[in-house]
Length: 172
Image (cartoon, rainbow, N blue to C red; front, side, top):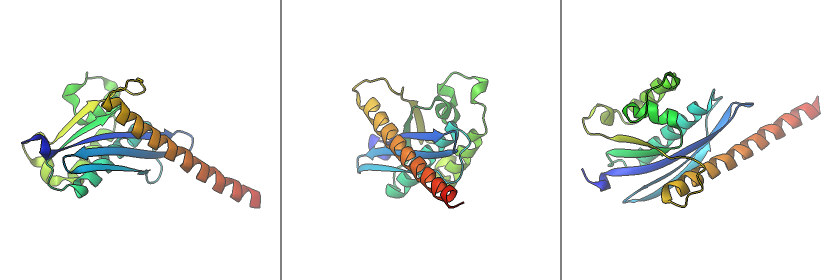
């Protein structure tokens, strides 16, 4: 396996505890190019960890369609919980990480890339990116890009929700 066989992905999500709405953004790159996307999570999202997993899920799904010949993913996330769930031996074990989302992302991965789940090569690596450090390195910059795009889209989603609620209440 060479470096050209893998895609590096940076993800982030923003979640609103009042509305249970969430949005995601990712930045992916490999030797074939760059893919930048963002969107909103379907339905209600129960917690920020589910939103972060949703971001990783969407990124892997879209990247696997864009570059189907790639055999591995390096996922960079600012969520320690996601790091633990996807790459548990790399993070200190605590009961805090024993949450239902772990099974959900494993199920997503099997749905997205069933042949990669059963293969012997290390197709998934997860690394924590410390958020809001103010550092100028590329990992911090890409994390800020994802954070900024997710937050911008959450504000837009909340404005749309508030606008539709106010229109409904003004008609009553």
